[in-house]
Image 1: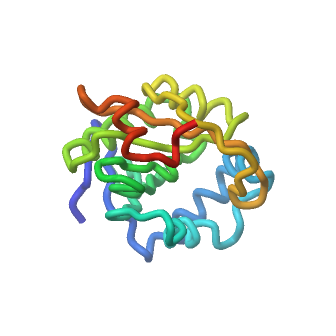
Image 2: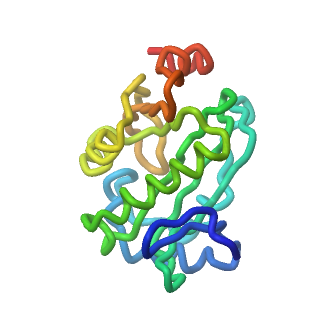
Length: 191
């Protein structure tokens, strides 16, 4: 299968349904994220739920992608799941960007994220949007380093087992794609 995007030593491509057990095994072997966000280990069907999850019907989107993140030897090390044209044209939402724990702190996440962002922009995205759980310090710091700006807080959101506050964050991807222009498109994220 052809890579969607790549960076030296790593690539992303659509995750196949038959690879869900491998993703589940990664989730099980790296429980830290699930403990921080949900207060529990990954459920036995966590990977399948992530693979199939869609937003509610009142949240329109243009397309959905579920990408496996792989080494150059095609070893699955993480996943990126998102939506294009989410709630507004040219707004891409990153629902999950996750790497197995052994890959943390090595610069791999930043390299893969930047490749994902370049792919999104080349595919029509002008803004990237995501929600990060307040208190997930590593993730909060990572997204701030990547240039995301908080536009709103959502309180008591069920993230899969625990009610969390979320920082809704946005990153303009090109000149002219200002936060003001984003908020004109996506009224829901106005503070």
